[in-house]
Image 1 (tube, helix red, strand yellow):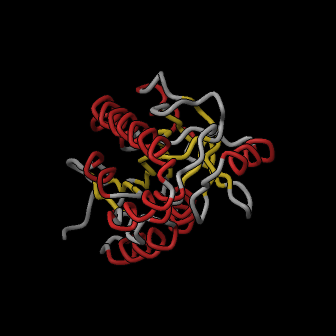
Image 2 (cartoon, rainbow, N blue to C red; image 1 turned 120 degrees about the vertical axis):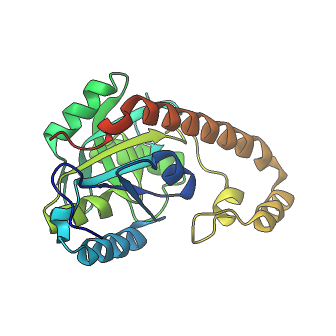
Length: 233
């Protein structure tokens, strides 16, 4: 690999799942997938350490994908641009110039804090508690790891996430039980869960519709941003 110049340095895009990475992919983008903070941290550190120019060979790190809704006013498909990342250890800043540039291209987006969590926030009560205590608008399991890696390596960081499950809805137990460690779905586990609790078919169908809305919005945002996904020069 030849050393990158300031003009052609690629952007690292951090996603939770493969479909998010497929949407984000494009010229000048390199995607890193979780799910979860441990995978993201390990993969980012290895990637940054392996470049001949180190961190200077990259334009920045963007967290891009879906999120759980915490702000009750946000519906599935709402876009949140992070004004910072809330963690249990304290807030992590974003690059303000980059965030303003993203907002200029996405006037429909909402600004606000994203919560970085190590596990899914599955219940309405847990979401409501985090809303009361921290005032965050949405949460995911990759943004805090990406933000910390950016801070370690001296790179700009921004986050653009789309609400999948809204604040007023709990995740069905069968969906959580069927979630594989790599983020995929164990279909047999899902079917066994539905057989044990058939009443969850309705919330599972609602979750599938929410996921469709979130994917649709992600694709639209990606088209709107184009090459402007990267930080301004």
